[in-house]
Length: 339
Image 1 (cartoon, rainbow, N blue to C red):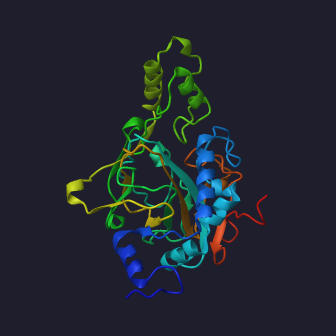
Image 2 (cartoon, one colour; image 1 turned 60 degrees about the vertical axis):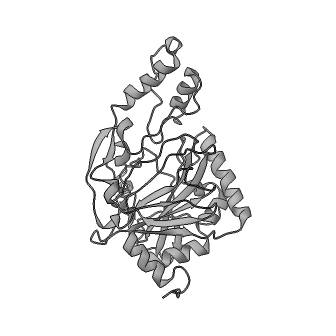
């Protein structure tokens, strides 16, 4: 059967999503001009070391709260219809993130998120989501949109089909050994480059590196010595590593995508990406959606406004995508038009 249910996905696509844990790539959903604008906005965000207007420090998160055209992009009716067909009518967009993988940058290892988004990828344990019913199979869904063509050699996403039905074991390891480790020194041609990135927090995402070189006479360091100084510091941070995956025994799907295409998946689905072996950078943006009865950033209610990614969420706001708020006023929404 290929009929659609009031817009969105077909019955066959919905069945496939629940079987595999993902669906895509799905066709481009908006005009080319909007993709162009979002692409440029994302490049501006990742290449600008100045503090994020919402978080007061460098971050690739939630630029849809800053750029109005990005909000328009991520809340497009086609996307909302797809989400409704999978998770229901009362939906809230609570987070977005830009993914910028430079040429020659290594891939992201296998990982799954069991629903809390607690920052364990950088050693934290502070849930971002508290669902009303933890017995649900999953309560968050992610949409990942390609902003450049993503060929096989340009770090495409990979999924393990059906892995959302199994919780894989994991352990904490030193950060440079984790699934999320990326070479922080790409593009650093001098000690000054490394020191500047460390101080403006663009060296390692979500990790406070501002004091790594405090009290250190960096004028005595060679480039390699400065890199080793950073590595030794980051070895002290725990981070998540997935266990129990034998790729030869898994049903792995690799997803090359065209610019503007998207994939939808539950975070419980094991996913990662290949390395970027091409001569061009890969750019994408994702956003995360949950049902409106889920408590978003629950630590706020105890006066704790630092989330699992070490960001100050005091100014963070959610976007009501569809339906009504069922959080009984506990979630904070953006009201009125953006400036």
